[in-house]
Amino acid sequence: MRLAVCVNHVPDTETRVKVGSDGKTIDRAGVNFVINPYDEFAVEEALRLKEKHGGEVVAVSLGGDTHKETLRKALAMGVDKAVLLKDDAPRDSFSVARALAGYLKEVSPDLILFGKQSIDSDDAAVGQMVAEMLGLPSVSVVVKLTVADGSATAEREVEGGKEKVLVRLPAVITAQKGLNEPRYPSLKGIMAAKSKPIEERQPASSADKIQVLGMRRPPAKGVGKIVGTDMSAVPELVRLLREEAKVI
Image (cartoon, rainbow, N blue to C red; front, side, top):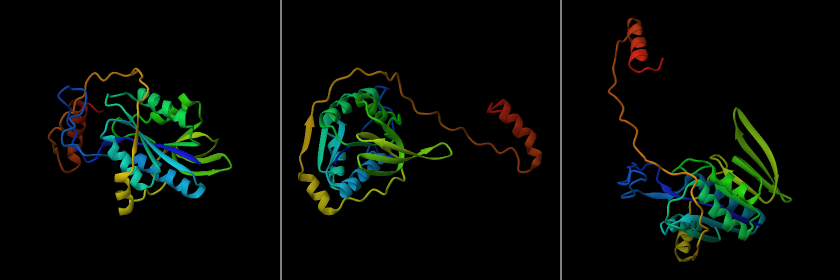
């Protein structure tokens, strides 16, 4: 079974984000980058499927040399091969999907896994766009996955419950938290990953569909106000909510 898992290199969730001098990107100075947390669930699921059915797991990432750090994390977890579609230029979700789809079309995996979204842009769109570009079925926010006899049965989260979907392979799956518990890389895996080669490919170019006009931090929160401690404060509280906060 040939499995491909797409991973992204993103700022740590604990990073204090600052807007860069261009006003359109973040200031990367002092920012710690990690593998996208949702992509870890995708990597783990690919490894479990390989352990059950045999085959090969390929991790793919689009970006500059810094993305090799995330690819080595995937190698340390146990993937067999890492591929960097090298491009330092910023891309929107459509352009990222186009580049990934171009490579994935060449290798024709039986199953393609993504995290449900990347925590930097939070578009939650790349996996579905790749599926559309490749003409493959897709199931998103998957919390349980079973593969057998050329098909995948995926349980996904929907409003108010869960839905079970059957798709023929090849297909695209996006992983949600709860699908599994990602393993910690072993010391042996970490050491081996340092010496494993990372294949570099030139991705296909594609025009962005979205242009970032500017970024800004949200306004600072105002000072709190205590208007009373008993029921007599209710009329004043209602007045402030209506006239100052303008929420009612």
